[in-house]
Length: 280
Picture 1 (cartoon, rainbow, N blue to C red):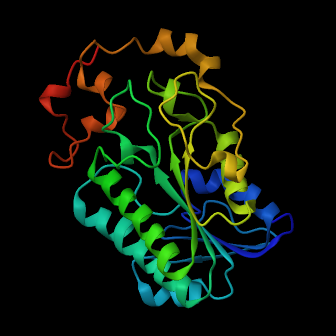
Picture 2: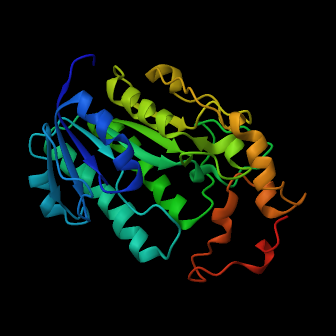
């Protein structure tokens, strides 16, 4: 796909990740259609069009997907919370999106998953896409549902999906966990660019992390799509060590790859489980 794609739909365009990748997507699309449930912080520019849409409303998606060639799905809930809002944003919305994609002949979806779908592997392990998901939260469970939907629609209907298991995507790494899980903004843009431009991939999983010194992930489709991260949390290792001391040996946040999401108990409305207090 060296040429521009006719129309790319970016969901979640008003969110943090959507705003980061938006300029790069304009370079790959003849028309970039932006959508979110919230208003865009920046008005559309030349080559863009925008509309508000709740992806949980299946009827609205027929208009949204008219003329769309490829979907970059960055929409949905991005943190732990109770099930009802997660179900609407990360389960019903994803099903609706694929159902509408099938109806309108869309051939590829780039799906923003999360490395939290394997958060209950130990920090000494290296995870491959062939290993079972071990979600560390209700949020991660709904992200895993999206991967399964993508797999189903590829094998049943031939809609390609590249699942991006996005890590801690911040301007600079912010914790010890980032030594394995950090994804820089620049590498995020490159990751999405590669997922759009890659030739036939079928259904694939790529770990959305930079070239970090600690390796929790292996055996994904990064080489297949040509993703080669340029940044590394190792460049910030001294700063990380100074700001965030190592976790206490044996503490649950040190044992699991999940990190601080384990402190976000969906049952406690933001409260921290007692066993996860005093991590250092």
